[in-house]
Image (cartoon, rainbow, N blue to C red; front, side, top):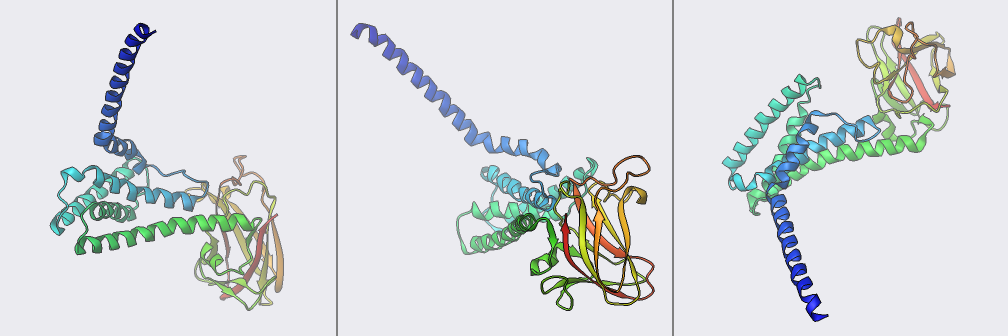
Length: 325
């Protein structure tokens, strides 16, 4: 038994030793070049636009956060090759990142993406995080850490707000707006405000100020994306004047947001609101357009808009209890 086991032990020991050497070589390579390889792999993502989530606002916020992470890692990868001890070096690195960021934005435009100059700010924030948090702590370094971390916290708050909005919208479906909560006003753009003057239900409604000589509309810019499970859109609208008012509801998917899409290929539904409260119900499965195609992709909703045309004088309406049915 002893004679038989001795060669096996020698071979086994040699195998373990060789395996350890291979693993040490791999770990050494990863330590030296792994971050650089990760940055090269991640470079194409700077030119991409989602999807990381099913919500457009959250998706955009997450991709924007990726710029900060990428440039922080880039500084970490170049740490041994950069002198980052004094403010002239910080300024030089920041200027280099600024120039590189401008070049990246022009390259994005060349490959068919819209330029976003705020990406330059995010790239600089990432570089500053790398510069100051990889440096030995001094009063100047701690000041830089505080500023860079504050700017990063602001960018992170955009992601948190987008995620919170998505959660709140999902939690209240099929209702799109009761206007009882202050945060609901942030989902709308245009001449709108929360009002306790009128309400179909609850205490408040959304007041909309419409001007005759200008295109004013109330736009819900953060609607839930998927409406495919619903058949109609319902809302209560209050007209405080005896004169009837013609309103139009426009619903856009991401394709019809393109300004080149003809009017006849967009979802528009007009109706008349009389004095007092009007309960309006709009079918979500309209006839096909003149090309025989559906006017709207209900699983890809991007915006809801309410506006008036051909007015003689300013008008004020109240919108309440907006919901899908």
